Image 1: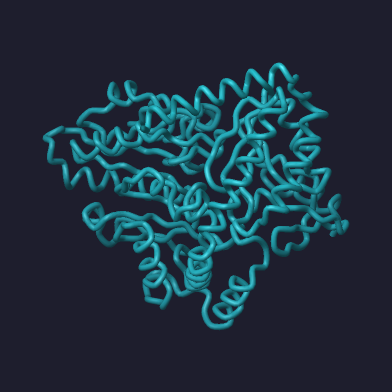
Image 2: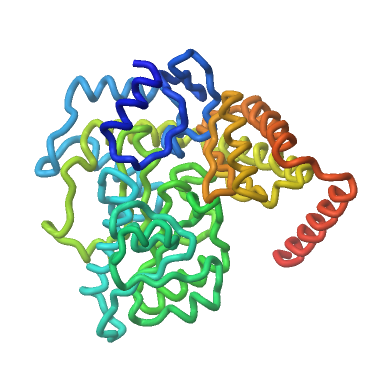
Length: 427
């Protein structure tokens, strides 16, 4: 079928939940995709962080073919050989001890919230009668199920489905005083994306995350980190929280875990796992042999890629920062590793730039209206970064104009002053 036929069929048959780009992809290899007309695209979105090893990675293909020829599904009423192996690898790299497998990031997050409430009911040592409140962050995004939606700090997602799950408060992002004000003995968990993804690539500050860890430890509440987008190598470490030198009570992962197959996971401690017993939670498809076998191969490949992610991510960031100094429409550049966002001065500019890049055969996306989001495969090379940055430079020129020499000097002085303050702060 061609694009017109597929689009027409979808319009008649599917719920209208997506505003799709008018492209019909038919195959991929490495960091590239091809559409139905044979046009080649450089993929710097990787299925919103899912295809972290690119397309048709040989190790993933081998694992798929081998396991599909043996066993695809048996249900969680029985054992298969890959759940324990995958859990062991995740426990080793995370520093946590227990794992639950599910189908997606939002399902993992929902399960984490249930686990926090269940644990609080059986381990309420501070004497508070109603230890069940959840504190999440403004501007956050945790998924589409009712639990995940209820902890998502953006009204545009919650309001169409209100009333949502009660007992959730929202703390201003990185606001230490607001966190202290809202936190008390009734809180069973503080819920944080280590780097907010959908809302525009906003890393949580070290001070805020440390305070959340201190407060939760004092009362027996849990620190739950959502690393569905920023975890599993995206920032140059296995988990983004490892950049901060602390450990959560629960962390959720999903997107790249099974290289395109549906698989999510909740990672937690032995202590928190005491809140769950057989029959309280479950899944039909989660943790099946095919997805787990592929995920084991993904983690094997990932181990050798971390130095490359750090090197290429630093190169990409430096290249984007250079563009920031040259274009008046660029307000800020944020992120870590290969999770980067360029915040532009208007939604119109961002939309025009993303559209122009797609026309030139480069795939990114626009999130939170004004932010260009880059989530490329971990296997990209510097030449691919150069190609994207050159195309972005031209698109920004046509959409936002260039910075004058006077403005460049002013911006450089501002960055220099900021760098000096930062060095003094950490000296």
